Length: 409
Ligand code: G
Ligand code: G
Ligand code: MN
Image (cartoon, rainbow, N blue to C red):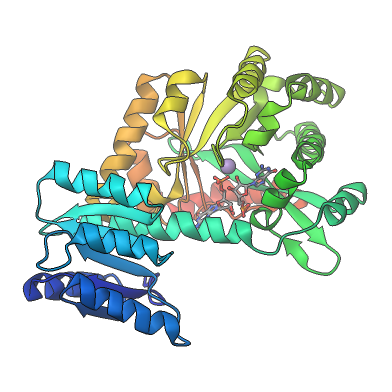
């Protein structure tokens, strides 16, 4: 376990000294170093107030027992909400599952950042899973919120063609063959250097420029795809679409026209979709997705398992591919909870006739777990990081040799 969590300040609240000690030990084993504990809800609130009023920031994470003398966990949760506590919350209890579930819903209804609920004694695998969710989700959220670019800045960047596509290889686990690449846009900013999508996608959505961005990403992808094809490199290209893009009813026709202009076959295009925000116009999205499908463009459900990409979508929409989120892939070999989520997601996808991709493959163990679980494709730093278009052909040429070494064949 890498110490991903060292910077996190954690408060444990439980009236049983033994539970506090055990949980503290488990968290220390996971790399947490800044642990604080108290034995009642009231003491927790005092602690929180002391840290909030002082220059020090409040806690990043609170573990809260339900059954406590004096102020119980439910009351503490209510008080946390009243004080605007914005950190993560994990409920821990010996109470039966239903009670814990109800408490969970209550915490969510209060608008708290609930990471999960754990039964006592706390299973180390489940604990890690809950914490992984914490580092996976909120980090992405804050990154997205970072420096907001204005509509004018984005418009100018579009006009000056400052957005460039990078490509991350997707390889078949069974054959190790390169079969495609995910297109990941970057902003080659004249002052800020290469800016990642997490820092401008949100702004582009907000300013109504996300369709313009998708257009440039698609056109460049078709151009690059055509060049690779002429060089003998046949690749399936996967482009990311925002939910907002799906309200654009003209998207399927635009895609078809541009692909035809570059003689790029639509059967080699995949559209990756994450439910990044509430679907504002579900009818339009279903219309667009279905028409894309009719044009033989493959649809992929991205970041599966993160809570954005949900079972409801699988039921309602014609997806061809499921991408298991990297938080369930990396480290799954050594973690029974992650592994079972990963395996059951893959099994479900297969039963629905979808092909599968594991993203976030960072080491040989991740590769092995996917291979064993029968996943079709792998993507991640272990194989290659996203790279400029010009680097892809050389990378592809070197891959057979490199993969043999990496996988010790
Ligand atoms: O490399 P990475 O930082 O590339 O990408 C971060 C996130 O940005 C990913 O969730 C990815 O899906 C998203 N993303 C990358 N390129 C695009 C794009 O062209 N359009 C949209 N909507 N999202 C993108
Ligand atoms: O949400 P989406 O699946 O489109 O995200 C792709 C994002 O994941 C990009 O930001 C990309 O840079 C990143 N990424 C790709 N491979 C890995 C990996 O092996 N580990 C990690 N942590 N991130 C990765
Ligand atoms: Mn993606």
